[in-house]
Image (tube, rainbow, N blue to C red):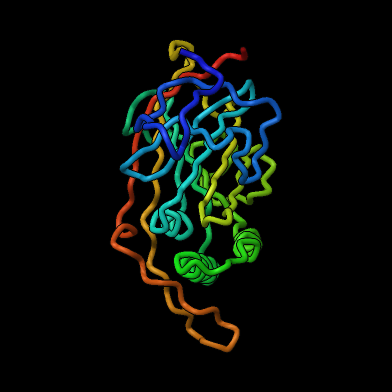
Length: 249
């Protein structure tokens, strides 16, 4: 059944683990790390991954909007990224799956962002005032790449977040240290077969946090090391669902 938006509250009523409805995206939706279009209402909360999310579409794009509140989950996304995979053939082992990983922050850049997030999270936990703009500005300067696979005419591997392929992504942290992730992917990339009924399988995976290697040379300008990875960051977590494109109301 197609609906515009349900009335579940992300902080209140119980949500399903996997989204059940097809959602036509609000007119004028923007990929800016701010989920105000949804009024903080999400279609599902998945316990395995510990994120709220809404999958939606219009005539041109598939949109994935994610909100993560748990510190360990946000930390793992910063370090390893979130991978959104689409399989239009309903085969879990299909090598032609389309996937997008974002954010992709590596090396000392990831060291610095994870460290800043950890420091501000500790301050927030102690009820201290935090300057969230510092974290958002740092994140913006370090998030330069997304990684794609399975898109015709786009080589597998990293591409710029300012790409010309029509893939849009953005993230922001709010004053409560909550992380919002937004991704827009052109529908034309899906290559849905005629018999699919515009339905596809998808997977959302939060990747395991890679080991952060200590810089070979430590100077006064080297940022302090981030906190060690928690037990929750040692392995990837994921879930699967099925989505049917919504028609314009």
